[in-house]
Image 1 (cartoon, rainbow, N blue to C red):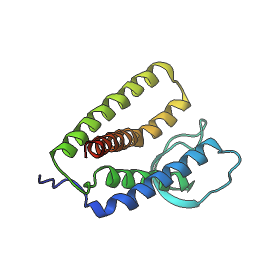
Image 2: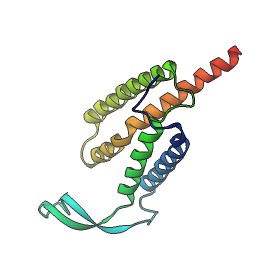
Image 3: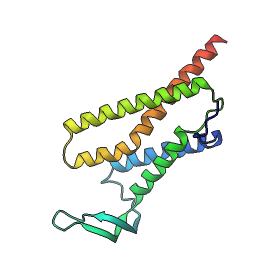
Image 4: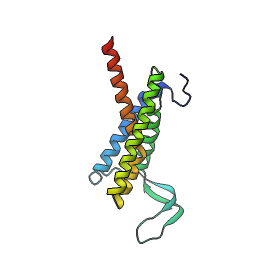
Length: 160
């Protein structure tokens, strides 16, 4: 089966390792935000910035910012995309069907969580949920896809 939109299989393991490592570091940074003082400050270009509630919004300027979370999110999303959409060792119609089903289930699950968050989460914590939403769809897809492939391989092994 011809799949031009998938990355080569050789990227799967390295991108998976980078994805899970970046996710682990992000979880640690967000859950231990007061005890860990790991910062990388840099001057970055900002399209829009609101330094505080009392100050006005600033447009198109350079600001000093801790960029560790932006770098980790960038790495997480790129590695997640490559890992999720890399070919399997044996890429056939069954794997394509599992991939499509997993993508549909991840979309349903992600939007159900969005709806629940819209109903029950307000204020600044909602911004954190939107940050998580950047990669949660990929996370749900990868988990479900790997789980179904794992179950499918176990069924095939038991039949032999």
